Image (cartoon, rainbow, N blue to C red; front, side, top):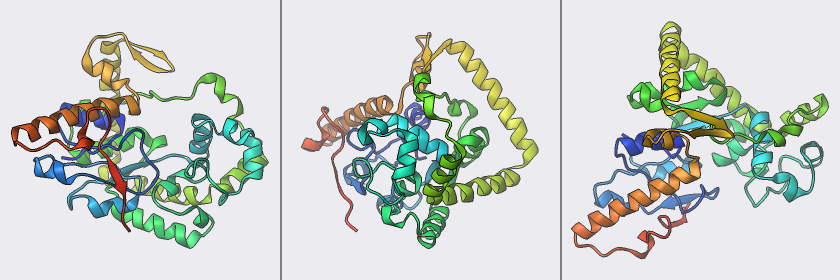
Length: 312
């Protein structure tokens, strides 16, 4: 069984004592490869969700690849706020959309339009090359075992459950990384700016549309009646857990319970990665000590596993 570095699936991996590979600090945009040979030699099957299609080169043949897409305009508006692009570019969202083109330089070299296709490996200069975009979509379609859709989360979770053969309780999800209400002032764009934004995001819309339609096909194969029944069961489970954990909703959720699982489900992605990273390194150090092997410097408990550039 594999697991991903999404907070909820990371929790599933931790509870079931599954191995994972984590980058040092926050997820990186650049093509990377992980030092996983030491882990394999110690009997740890490592897996991670990839931000680059080329990650397949260094993963086991039976790796399960999963990603998620979101309505592109909503995703970009959220990204603009979350990464504080307004302060960086010294312009608000409307001005940015009207003046910055799809292929222009990206903030910090990797944040900008068409973030989803960029994360999958499409170079910035190809965002308006629909042939290149279609090739990327086709490649992603072949690689990923499941592409979830944010706007169709309940159905996506049921498909994920079947793919990973996990229990319904393993899929308890809360929104823990929402935008602050005070920052929502420019979510609504005028019609001309909204249309222009969709044009800027043409690559992401092509990707999103493909997997949105594919989700419809997967739901049909799952069985619509069965899907409705399973989602109802999931909603009941989710309500029971929320009542048990006594969540206090602020920005995201805060648990009023001392139960470990209640606390874990409210952790943000970065905090959860920090927790899992420390736990995993302790396990690796323990195994290496038992095997009388020297502890490499990059396994220091002060940081994450080291990474090196992915060689083309």
